[in-house]
Image 1: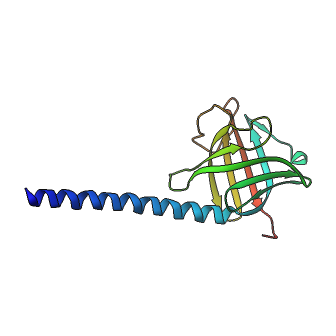
Image 2: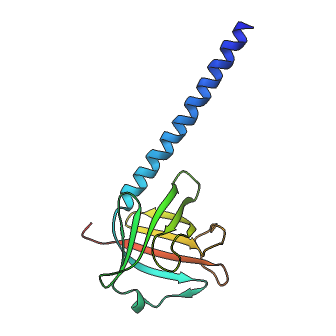
Length: 156
């Protein structure tokens, strides 16, 4: 009986250690991705519900990502939107993030998104408010998704 109790205690402590190790791995992956994303990104393309935003409309549009996940969108130097990335999870097969809207019409809402980082290119696919998280990087007609591609500015 004593052997069984010791075995169970050892198993439970080992399990707790694995949970903490998994949390540490996820935390490190979050820190790494946020560090990689920190800086200024030029909006290269945008599509929403199958409609591409004309290149002229994207001129002068930038996204600045702070190390703690606050994101400021500017157009020709003027702030037009501010959000905060929460629940960043780069350990998923497709990386996920929840986008908490800090200003504007959608203030207080949380939008579900997926993202990927490939060198100096960053892609974000966001579901409209109340929609499920996107499962692919697409913004087809009636999908309720917006797909944005950003390129890192050279001064970063």
